[in-house]
Length: 183
Image (cartoon, rainbow, N blue to C red):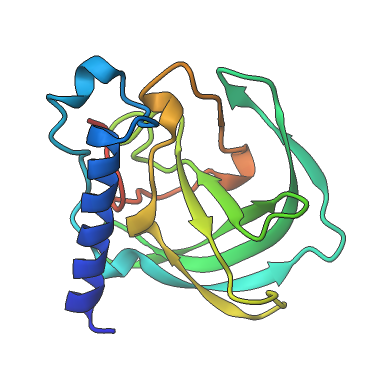
């Protein structure tokens, strides 16, 4: 897939999400805000934030309770750790890690994170990525972490939603100027 094709796919996913927010009955936006809603704010798609990450699988995952905004603690398991080179503002990279959390019976990995944009350019509760691995992940596998798909949890739009907050092990030292921004 070329960078242009990838960017077009990212924009199409964003348009679909904006339509959901504006029109769907399960939108997190209050009904009175939907008619005037003209889309979420996003950083421009940037292939520099579509990163290759090396997987370390936790064979015996540790349980962890994540603090939840607007709700009770949520129980997850530390399923994998992703290691990658995060772009820096000076043009270099910094080694970074994020933990992917799982739940029994679910194939999707939940990756909540904070970075230097949190609370300034992005939601103060952090952002999320969901990974849908094809097959079983093994140590040293490479996967793509696409921060352009990072999204704001629904609790940013309505107190009716409860959202796990990123634990300190998923606080990145750099700024991730990709994905959704604050509106």
